[in-house]
Amino acid sequence: MRQSIILISGVNGEIGHGLVSSLYNQGIRNLIGIDLSTPDDFVQERTLDCLIGNILDHNLLDRINAQYQIEAIYHMAALLSTRAEFSPVIAHEVNVDGTLNLLDLAMEQAQSHGQSVKFFFPSSIAVYGIPTLEEKSSVGAISEDDYRHPQTMYGCNKLYCESLGDYYSHYYKRLSTTDTAGLVDFRSIRFPGIISAHTLPAGGTSDYAPEMIHAAAKGEHYSCFVREDATIPFMTMSDAIVAIEMLMAAPKDALTKMVYNVKAFNPSAGEFLSKVKSYYPEANIDFIIHDNRQSIIDSWPEDINDDQARADWGWSANHDLDKAFSEYLMPVIRSRYEHN
Ligand code: SER
Picture 1: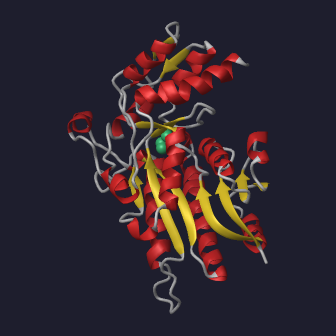
Picture 2 (picture 1 turned 60 degrees about the horizontal axis):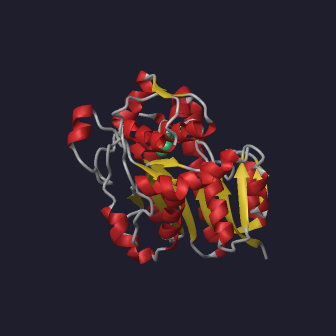
Picture 3 (picture 1 turned 45 degrees about the vertical axis):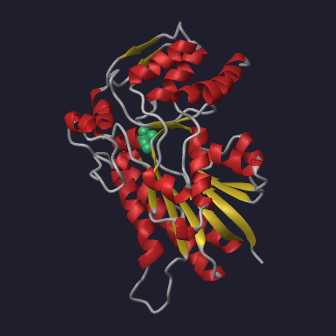
C-alpha cells in the first residue's frame, strides 16, 4: 500500500510556511513538500519529507505518483506579479504548466485510488483589470465575475488556471467513456495582498505593505514604490490560512463556486504608513514611485465583494486593520526583531 499524504508545492514560500505551521499544529503528520530550494528547518521539522525539485520535472512528479497516495494537493508554487513581468515566458511555464502538471497528477491519483483528490489553488486579485483610476474608485466592491481582464502575466496565468481547475473538475476528457467528473475537487481563493508577521514576500507587487512594517521594525529606511493614495485589499497571513482551511473543510455541496473572493481590510499605502507610524513613530519611510509597478496596483480593485464566501462557507476575517497590527503583526514582529 502506498503511503497516504498531503502534497504542498512551494512549501518553502510564504503561504507554504503558514500552511505547514497550521496543518502541523492540527496534528497532521503526512505532509510532503516540494520546493526549488531546500526548505528551512521550520518547514523540514513539520513535514514527512521535502523534495527538492521543479514542478515542471515530470520524472519527479512520476516518482511522487508511484510512491504515494495523494489525499490533497495545496499548490502554492508560483512566480508573483512583479517577478513575472521580468520573465513572462518562465512565469507562464511555472504558473500555468506547473499547475497543469499538478492537476494531471491529481487526476491520475484519483483514477488510480478511486477517491477524489482535493486541490487548493491560490488565485489572486491580479485576475482583475480595471481600465482607469476613475473607474477603480467609483466601481465599489467588485464580484468574482466582474472585470476579469488581467493586465499582468501573473494575472493571466491565475485566471487561466482557474479555468483549468474547472475543466479538470467537471469536463476532463468528456469524449471518453470514462466518467471523471468530481475526481478532482478543485477549490480556489482569489487572495488580496497578504501580510505575514513571520516572512517577507518575494517578487510581488503588493509587497510594499509587508516591506514597510518589517523595515520599520528593523529600524531600516524604506522607499514605498506606490503613491500614498494607492489602495488594494490586504489580509493577514493568519486569516489567509484560516480561509484556505475553511474552504477545504467545507462540504462540497455547500460550494456554489470554484473560486471565491475573500477580504479583510483595504487601506491606502498612506493609511498603512500611518498605522505603522503609530507603533514606530521614528519609521524612516518615504515614497519614491515606480510608475510601472504603480500601474499594476492601479489596475487591481480597491475593494472586492466576498459575500459568496460568507454565504457558502461562513467566511469572515478575524483581523481588520487595527487587529491585524495589535493582535497579529506587532506581537510577533516585536519579539522577532527584538531578539535578533
Ligand atoms: N500578492 C501578489 C502579488 O503582488 C498578488 O497576488 O504579486
